[in-house]
Each structure stands twice: as C-alpha cells, then as structure tokens.
Image (cartoon, rainbow, N blue to C red; front, side, top):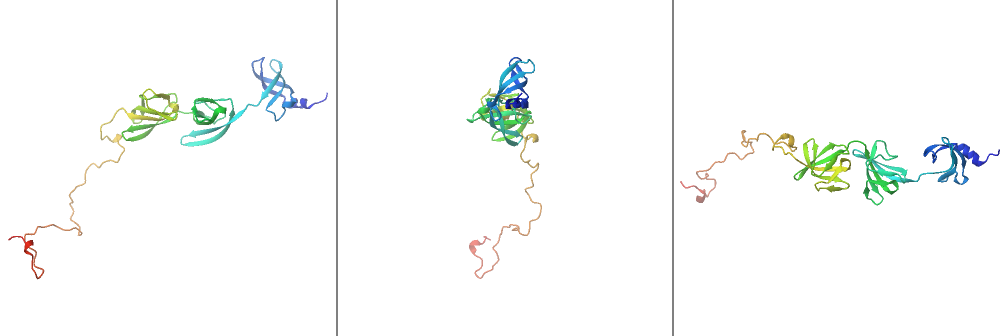
Length: 268
C-alpha cells in the first residue's frame, strides 16, 4: 500500500477532541483523513474523523478561535500593573466576574469600550481596557464631612452590600449618614441613589451623633494648654531695661549757662 502525504499527516495527528453530533458533546475522535488544502498554516483544519464512543464517522472543521488584544490593568492597593492579554474575540467580559486568562484571584472592576464608554458587560472585541482588582471585600474610602473640613476613614465591606444616599454606614468613628456616593465616574447625591459596594469608590458621609464640645477623642487639632502663663513677671528686670519711671516735682538741676527754662518748671 502506497503511503501518501495525507496518510502520514493523519497518522501524525492521530486523535483530537471534536464535537460529536451523535453524542451531543465533545469526545475523543480518531482522525481518518485531512484535507490537503487546510494543512499547517491555515486558519482551519478540515477532514474526516470517527468518534471513539459512538463510532460515528463524520466530516469536521476545526477553526482557530479569533482573538483580540485587550489592555488589562490589575490594581492591588496603591499599586497597579498593566498587561496585554489575548482573549477570544467573542468571549464575554462581565463586571464582578473573573477574567479568562487574567491573573488568578481577581475579578473585573470596570470595562471601557473602544469608544471610551464604561459598561457592565461586553464582548472582548469591543473592549479597549479592562480593570481588575483582587477578589476580596473592598476597602471603601469614607469622606466624613464636618463643615469646611473633612476626614477620611477606611471601611471593609462585602461587594454585595447595598449603599444608598440617605442610608447609614458604620465606621470606627461611629454611625454616619450617607449624603453622597462616587460610582460609575460620577457623584450621586439624590436620596434613594444606591449601588453595590463593589461599584462605589468614595462614600460621602456626615456624623449622625455629635459629641459634646471639648471631648478629647473627637478632637484632632493641637491641644490647648490647661493653664495660662502668668502675665506678671516675678523676676527682676534685666540690665537692658529702661529702669523705673518717676514723676519729677522740681526742675532739673542747672547744667547750662542760661539756667533752666521757666516754662518747663513746676510751680513752687
């Protein structure tokens, strides 16, 4: 029997996982014949194969999935790393879910399309940048507003916790009333505006309980001395001081030929 190139190619390929319509799933197949027009270098491989489970022989086409280069930014705390990932073009990317081919233990935080619009879900071919964060309860920044001043607290919350303008949040400083939320690249201030904690970057809040004035745990500025320094000096004056002041009752002694001026003398 003459050995052809097709026979040698099939023998080298041997077997492959292919979809079997008879079994309704992917099974191991024995490759019987390959189409010469689809040999190495082509985007698709065509030929004839036999299912090893049901013994059904059929034609097959195995195409290389199209891929798309997507920029992925992985953030961990204050550090960020930029990667270039090759993803299946039709593969879905969703906020809150792991990214296929991305770093393990991460989930998608944000998706930016080629147009610059942020969305919750898109196919990889439509995405320009995907933002990834560690899959753990987020540490939310809570800006506590007190008049013209504000302080910052960090609160760990589960991503599924719902935050609402008009609601409350508990911090190390006590319960706070939520007056605004920073989410989806804008600030929301209307009562009833709500988002899962995983979408919120900043919570704006005010104290619901105001402490009595002067209590140390609530003050962060420099402490005021408990006693004032004495305003009266008890030590003698230094030699550079002008000395004691006295009121003269008589004219100064004559020191010039003209004598003391009468207009400057005190009446006797």
